[in-house]
Length: 115
Image 1 (cartoon, rainbow, N blue to C red):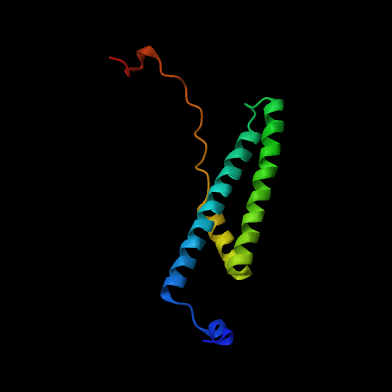
Image 2 (cartoon, rainbow, N blue to C red):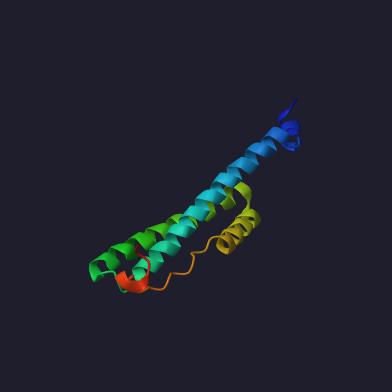
């Protein structure tokens, strides 16, 4: 088999399956980074955090965003730009934070919750 024949040969099912697994791993990593970004942004925006901690969270948020963009670039270089855009869109639709629970009043002794 010549080099030209190898280049035009269609991928085997094993190759396709390995590529799909690799894309799944990359997508999962992108989803983890997205979740970390959303959670860190929520903490940074919280009034409960002191100013020093908020500065640390801003630095961490910038690092996470850089890693997220780098992962999208890696997906684009490995699987193509169209696949990277599709993966990014899917992750951004799927990965969301649940709404923050509203603070509740602490239970009182006389509210019947204690026996």
